[in-house]
Image (cartoon, rainbow, N blue to C red; front, top):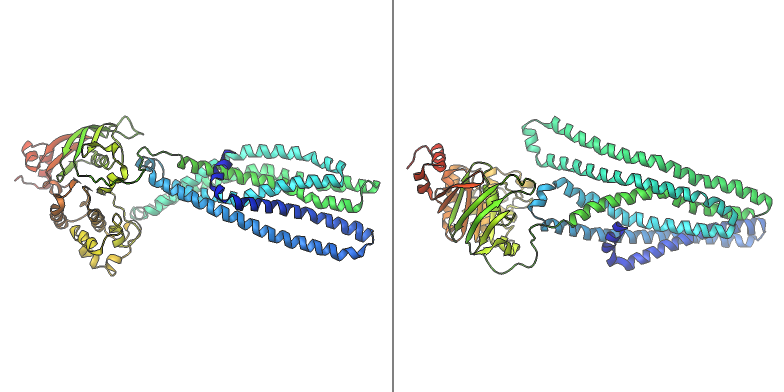
Length: 576
């Protein structure tokens, strides 16, 4: 019932159409109930009664009922389909909107394949419920009630003898529902895992081929595929246990009608026409009994899918990006006050420990350290992708938690370590943060990122369509387009997370010269492994296992002859 109530909120805007459709379903059932009565009249009044003048009228009535029912069925099925498509359209809208509300923590714990399964397979299961299962349930209930009423009007003793079977069918249907319910949840989870494996392999196909691991990946897929098959077979075995019994019991009704009804006709307790009418109404009793098992399966499939979708919609982001953007713009003052951070699923491991520093607007801060030192995590606290576990992060002397998240991120541009480009033109990727930007600004941003040269050499220039995730471009080209995207945004705070790792030294030098020109206008954070990328910074922070072990400018750190000095010697070779 909880599932139906949840679905009802999406169907509610179309209640008028649904009410009309339900009325047409019931009307169709009533029309179907008239058909056996006409057949009975043909036998009793025309064949046995000799009133042949009624035959054409009765045949015309039967043809008319068939046409009316056919048209009626077409109309209400179309109406249910329209409502289902509209309802699931809004479900997808809500799911997609929720995806953009959720924070990084959610995506760390949910695979893309699982999310895609909710957006596609689960939504379609609900659409099938609204478009087909719902009207089938209403139709079969109407058939069952009309059948009982009509059969009672024909012969009460014969009807009561048939209804003895109904409680048995009800018991079996209920028992089947209890057994099949968990199997659909298992199928749903297995499908999600299978989806994740496929998505992961498509995204990582280059790595698979580079390491010649096709056989391994096929074997891994096969294991998940077998699991999915077994889960479905287990569900099928539950059906196989009950559906034949339900079908058989429904079939027994026909035998009882012939046996008991035949005896009544021979005893003169009912006419042959009444027996034919009774037998004609029998299908209205049979269909709900035969369909009950199938409908239970579809309902349980819908319940499992609804559970997964509601789980996602009910997930609350720890960092909420709600409300209207504020016009207030960030100036660029940043301060960390004794900041600690750990991830929720690994509270015993502190990624950042007692981080404290201040940055004035327009300064350039470089962060250096070994892999896993916490560099990327540190800058992610500035954009509030995560919140500090303890301590405070201040932006313009205001706690970052008090800022409107959208307004804050509007003033920050991040070039992430894992470069992502959309399947769009190069210009479309650069203007992602500023969709209305003039081409001259796009071109200037590309020049600053040293991307204009290779872009103009392409056949279609800035209109060149980039493959999925930047397929067809080198790592350095992707980094430069990503940098151009950030520069075009003209942020108050610019975060460059290992932005030039995939470019050569000459290109890196050109990019640094361009960044110097805009450096005084914005607060800049540079994460790098190369000393050449950070030595011009106003402040260099050296991180080791989440702690700042050294800080100062290039010359001050060389004079200390510590970690930075050692890295400089390894990379440059000579201290100047």
